[in-house]
Length: 122
Image (cartoon, rainbow, N blue to C red):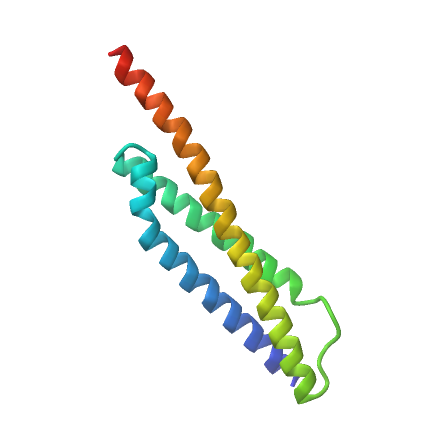
């Protein structure tokens, strides 16, 4: 039973991570293009880098937390195990999203200021 619960945890959390990364990537490109002064190449490159970082951090977190806590011995324990681990992973994914949005907004302002400075100098 323990192996099944661990497999379910990995399947559920990695599937959520992939879904969130794809959704954020697909819908975030418009935001990135705006942040980077309509520079499509920079926006797409940054979008890809954010997705890779998102996967690395979240899948790393998911696999690290696999070994935390007591192994479930009953069906009730398995449900508690899954709900607490999946819930924690979802919270971390949400925090990663807000961190990424803040970092992109900050970086986008710097790029826009730099690009405005170049346009004024030309």
